[in-house]
Image (tube, rainbow, N blue to C red; front, top):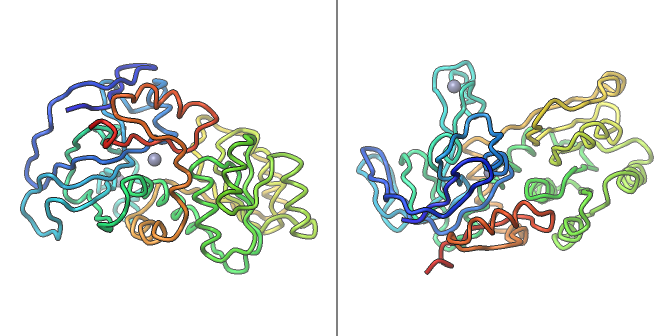
Length: 337
Ligand SMILES: [Zn+2]
Ligand SMILES: [Zn+2]
């Protein structure tokens, strides 16, 4: 079968590998679509701390069950599913206290173990999450990033929140803004430095402002100069880390969904003077997937897909994903037929 293989720094190629043989408690999935994630960039760059070549990428999939072992599950061959990609140790403090998604030794399919950017992927039955039969493969592949957004929004108390800011209009920023809006927050303002991303945000019905002084003015105008009630950091850039505290009101909340590659400068004096709350948000929990599936039925999430490629063209797809003109880039396996 064909698989998108990371072969070493800056090498991602379509390669023929054996179809994996499933063992007890496992299933074989025929993949229909698989999205590129920001974290795939660090894998291919060779800078991800754990991912080692050779590796099949991909943790944002939709596909149909081709083979499945017996057991106490309600899944059958032909069911449309996505994967819950987290592998937790089960023993650490987080795992023992119901927070396995922030396991001390968290591992993921597509990072530590072969992922699903391939014709087939072998997964534990426990890692499968059933999707509605009518869901398109593209939307199915967006459930994982949508679950990231659902989790990020769930990390904040939305009571009394009138104005929320989302820094960064990439896939996670846009999905976070859509989820925040769906929760009834009256004003959600998204910002980015890339104009094409701002226009995509506007197409999604979001209030979008260029990062910097335009965003600052808009937020202050909406809040009588106080600052936003809530801010989601989804840009992962040192500039946004430095500026975020100035955009939030006293006693406001900042949720950081970004994976910063190195420590960033944060204005701790503002955190102190304004008694801000700074909250982390990492991946998701299972219930976030279920909520993401519900939301995907109504939100215009599919609009964030800017490009689709065949698996054979995975190198070109990755190059496209790397450019600022792209939003979500998806490998659509039906294009290989
Ligand atoms: Zn992802
Ligand atoms: Zn653990």
